[in-house]
Amino acid sequence: MAFEGLSERLQTAFRNLRGKGKISEADLRSTMREVRLALLDADVNFAVVRKFVKQVEEQANGENVLEGLNPGQQIIKIVDEQLTEMMGGATTELTTAPKIPTIVMMAGLQGAGKTTTVGKLARKLKQEKQARPLLIAADVYRPAAIEQLQQVGAQIDVPVFAEGTDVDPVQIAIDGVKAAQANHNDYVFIDTAGRLQIDDSLMDELKKIKAAVHPTDTLLVVDAMTGQNAVQTAEGFNDALDITGVILTKLDGDTRGGAALSIKAVTGKPILYTGQGEKLADLDVFHPDRMASRILGMGDVLSLVEKTQQTIDEKKARQLNEKIKENSFDFDDFVDQLEQLQRMGSIKDLIGMIPGMANNPALKNVDMDPHELDKIKAIIYSMTNQERENPDLLNPSRRRRIARGSAQPIQTVNRLIKQFNEMKKMMNQVSNGNMGGMEQMMNATGMSKGMGKLSNLAMKRMSRKIKKNKRKRTKKRKK
Image 1 (cartoon, rainbow, N blue to C red):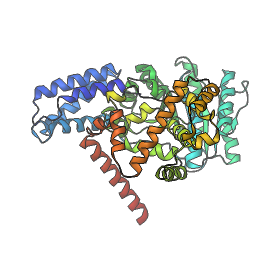
Image 2 (cartoon, rainbow, N blue to C red):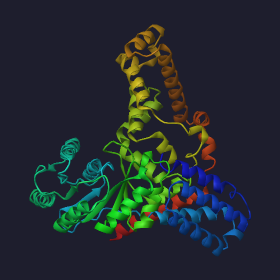
Image 3 (cartoon, one colour):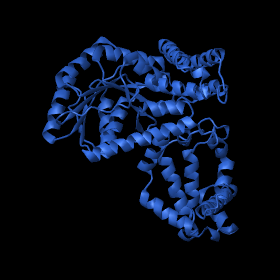
């Protein structure tokens, strides 16, 4: 999970402040020294770290925080606000052109995941806004790039405009935009050429494309795992092209996170999206306030709710609820729930969104191995329909047959059936109002201890967000 190391170190730094009725200036200096070292170790730009620490110290002293009520919580609140500001403050979205098409020019170095990100963004807009995007293949130097974009377009059912490798990229961009206008495509994504490093010929070509089609947004795709190199790349592209925003890829593999914390502060340009995996669905809007909360171990309830709403089928959820009440939950339901959970992404990532859970030692290595899920499916699909619907039929001879059919040891089959029965029992207890089942489950995973540490600050943040959204809805209704 991104920021895992930084999150652990920051929470360790603040541990000594929590619960103190009074904090001395020496306590503050010691804590901020640890914060500074944690940020530098996370590969955050040195100048950015220095400015950040100075601002936190000034606010902590200037507002009489050290002498106030709950000084530890107030200092964490200041750090939370400054982290949010460092990463851009407010969430930034794509600019929509006054009339179609909205043209988005995508730039970046080779290996950053630019072509895949083009597909991810087009898919996201198609699903969420019912958009009709067009992808333009303007990378003529790497024949495989055109083929790759066409394959991505086929996967998401989005047309790709290509004129081969013998046409000037500027002309391809112009022709592609004309085709979009003729076909009434409302979004156009231009997949430009990349290089192994920034050079004059690349920048000259990108400048010409930008001057020819006047994109609504010029987005730079950078690899988060390259750390400060990502920041330097962003600086170079911004100086030449005046980019409007950044998309960070491979954030799920970056345990330090320095690029995300530095790019906005160094370039002045916001991060719009983050790539959290290799699938075309793995693209998330970047919310600086939510990311700051996660870094500080306060969770990200709003993102967890949004991810759940996007993934979980409400009709199936209602049907499942009825089956649990009737105690008729079976292996088919079990597989369905595992698949829905898998679609939500990494379990470790989801745990990080729950307040107090991010660095719970009991959950540190929890994750869902896709290979394990395949084994579970093999076992369940080796059962007859009757056995899946009525697990009580699974006597020793049937279990041996299932083990042979799934090519799994009999011990693995027995363990799965035992886990299923325990899960079914707990679900039934909870649905009948017996919270002992919930306590059992939480104690087994260590969740009860973590939930006891849910900070007041996380709750206040969530409350403020809910009230803000409520005011927005009220204003819309009045209009």
